Image (cartoon, rainbow, N blue to C red; front, side, top):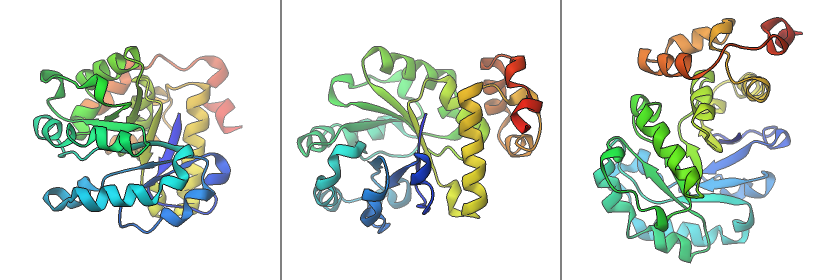
Length: 242
């Protein structure tokens, strides 16, 4: 799984981690240092203050780096699928017209609404923590793959969330865990990604990551517990720690 960090770190790119850019964060001058990147819309932070014209102008400024861009996210409304659909539909073709793969954000309630599959290239799993790890979101991700789309999950800052994203077949995920104690958190993130390559199920192993998982909601922990099989012997905790 490709991980995109919203908090740049000088050593992250060396380990294959990509960059998630947001308008106004002034990290765009670092694009060339990363193997890949994606353009967020900033709606999570700006809400109703989002303005389309500056966003499209900002995308135009990044066009020299389009070859390594995984997607650009159409404007959305957090945890509101109906409002997101109305807000995104007019913008998705404009993003494509600028030469970017367009990402549509699935939010709470999307399972009850039509999905404009032909209008976008990447399904971005957003919404509340409870919804993004729900069976409804997992079903949408599976349908997206059948439609030939790639799938991305936003706000992934824990091992359990990474497991959930991988279980759903997400091709990429993003997070800001490197914003705090970046050197230590980078090593932690790399351990998580390496473990997922070996065996995605770490829930039953315990260890230092369990405290992080314990802070998550009961529904999310149950989602991971049910969907992941037991760890095989070749991926036992002892071997992982060796």
